[in-house]
Every structure is written in structure tokens, then in C-alpha cells.
Image (cartoon, rainbow, N blue to C red):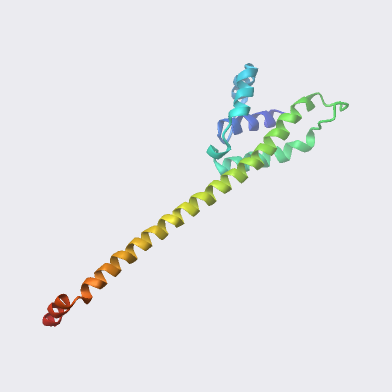
Length: 141
């Protein structure tokens, strides 16, 4: 259970790890904790950190159940760990989509730069083809 809570809090903080004090600070004031759950921005998270947290959630989830008839008194935390796992999966998709969008924007800019370079080269070529300049260039040879 401790690992799950530390992983959840580390996810909310976008850090690799959290400790017992961090967990206590986050859970001490329930409204602030809920606000953080509702306001976390998947697009601002670090992809590698999110992947690591997902791995942690996947490891611990089999130890918990959402079954209310279970004897495990810590199962009440299972919903948080399940949320963390699902949120990690969502964040990974958002971060990958953001990366792809950035790649598209970079390629568009590169294309625009190439089009401008070609226009400049065509202008220079046109100038070089003019008779006066051609005559001048011929005299230099």
C-alpha cells in the first residue's frame, strides 16, 4: 500500500519518487488532494517518469481488489491505484500525441524554410541569366 501511495503522489508531483512525508502532506487535506487529482495536466508530465509509475501500479494492483467483501483492509486504496494506472496510460497517449504534433510542426517549418530557399535560389538564377550579368560573367572567364 505504501508503494502505491508513494507512486500516486510522485505522479501528481511529476517526480520519480515520493516518501512517507510527501504522502502525509498530500493526504492531510482531502480537498487539496482531490483538487490535485482533478487538475493534473497530462501534457506537462515527463514521459519516462509516467512510464515508471505505470510499471509500479501494474506491479501492485494484483494485491488489491475493488471487491468490498474482501478481507484486505487496504482495498479502499485500490481505486486510487487503479485511477493512477489509468491516468498513466492516458498521459502516455497525450505525451506521445504532443510529441507527434511537435514533429509535424517542425516538419512544416522545415518545408517552409526549403520553399523560401528555393525561391531565393530561383531569384539568383534568374539574375544570373540576365544578359548584362551573363556578359559580365563571360568577361571574367
